[in-house]
Amino acid sequence: MSRDRQWLLVAAGLVVAQALILRSMGQPWICACGTIKFWHGAVHSSENSQHIADWYSLSHVIHGFGFYLLLYLVLPRKVGFATRLALAIAIEVGWEILENTPYVIDHYRETTISFDYRGDSVLNSVADTLWMALGFLLAFRLPWQTTLALAVVLELLALWAIRDNLTLNILMFIYPSEAVRAWQIGG
Image (cartoon, rainbow, N blue to C red; front, side, top):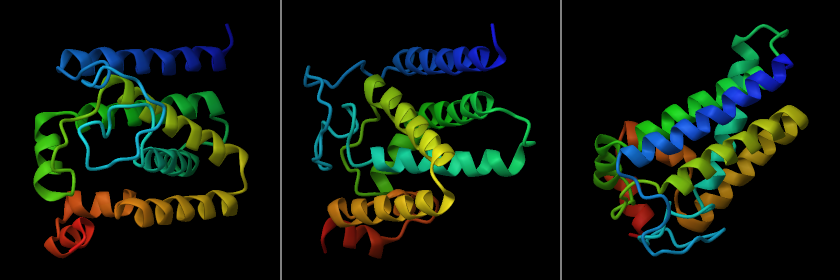
């Protein structure tokens, strides 16, 4: 078995572990509504972060861009794509598990516009990891200028559509601002 294949199996194993750990933490397999949708665009809804894709999927694509850049900068050039992808998936899986702990869920509800956030369904969380992998693959394939432009477009699109994006999510998680929160609500 080739080294690349081994790393891809490690990556797949990490995603399976993610699903099992989240389920053991009490996260539902799918939306409590009992349906599976490819897209759910209503942010202020109990179905947000429960389906395959939503507005926050854009942030996970950008995670992939960022993880590609980070691993490009810190790893020797001889480290292959599959190894880098597996490491990026490990980082994302770690975040997805942390994001679904009671502490982070409560923090999001208290400091962001995610008032009714109960954490991700296992389906949504695994999909988030796959969206990150797509972003990683795009960053690998596209010129860096195109990747950067795409990141800006995705951030601006989410900002326009839902008054939230990865940048505001990080800001509000680290340094909550009532002014930003009021603007996000529409005040």
